[in-house]
Amino acid sequence: MIPLSIPSLNGNEWKYIKECLDTNWVSSVGSYVTLFEEKVAEFVGSKYAVATSNGTAALHVSLLLSGVEKNDYVIVPNITFIASINSIKYCNADPILIDVDSETWQLDLDLLEQFLKEETVLDKGTLLYKKNKRRIKCMMPVHVLGNMCDMVKMSDLADKYGLKIVEDATESLGTTLNGQSSGTFGEFGCFSFNGNKIITTGGGGIIVTDNEMLAKKAKHITTQAKSDPLEYVHDEIGFNYRLVNILAAMGVAQMEQLPKIIERKKEIAAFYYDALGGIEGLEFQKINKGTDVNQWLFTIKLDDSRAILKKLIHDKIQARPFWVPMNQLRMFKDDIYYNHYDKSDQVYKSCLSIPCSSGITDMELDKVVRAIVQ
Ligand SMILES: *Cc1c(COP(=O)(O)O)cnc(C)c1O
Image (tube, rainbow, N blue to C red; front, side, top):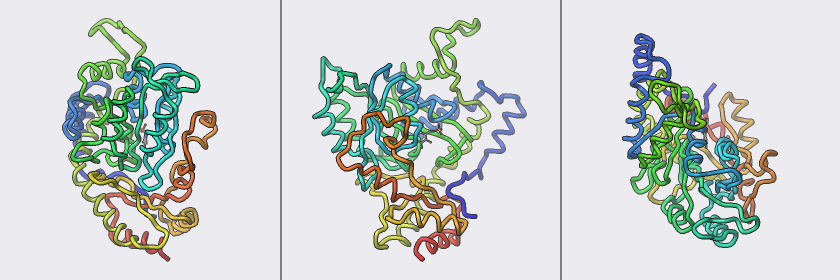
């Protein structure tokens, strides 16, 4: 069996976790949480980082601190993992789903610009959806598969229309645009350390921001909003969203290996580009100029993707289809889906992620290629 993408735990994970167990610092307090936050902030070049129990919690809290309230709208691509939309719904807000670009598979910025021009109106600095005058508060770009849309252009649109940006950067740790890390273009960036991400803490997430007050607030509401160091006084409804020390210890060990893992992911991608390039009808994800992608999960686009998927599974090669577009899920069928050609559906039906664990061998890579080509 060749797995799709499994963690690489070849560093100091055992050592640091053992230290937590030996010293009894296993839970919500301990030095590894702070160290992990410092490491991630340094790596992405943000001033602050606040660790959370998972990426979904990071998104939820970032939206709340961006001022998203009941009945607000948040702009988001129609192709993403469901957690992006769920985090919007947790705020009692609704998504405005924007169709994706058929080449980058990211939110289509031209379509977004058209939507903002034609479907919204600015009223004393507040952006309203014309049809029902509900407020649009925020945009959540999702850096699908570690790639990015043009975040400079999106930031310009955000400025022009008075929108906040929360980046769902959960898949894109290590990706940069013109040297600037994903997650640092918006007011908040959120990363995930779930088992299938580029590095993992088993489960975990982190919020990055340059705003000190917002970082403090994020820490506060992810740790039950306790406002007195001794007495159990809480000043608002908080959440138990903290990352525990034992997992942060694993995170520190993983951060030490991240540059090596990214390097290996890029080698794997280069192998596939070479071996599968030029095959009639097979496309790779387009990467915009200036973007350096972490190559988290290698994905190809081809018409008979589902037949190939079956063949790979039959050959004991793990592969996975792309997410069902959000507008096709029953919970979101009444939400706004802005599109001209429903490219999401075509991207969804033809994309296929293939094995790319950083520990994959050359022989295994050859086997994957042969199974696809033959
Ligand atoms: C993984 C992921 C999340 C959620 O992260 P968790 O840590 O699993 O909660 C959110 N959005 C996208 C696009 C993801 O891939």
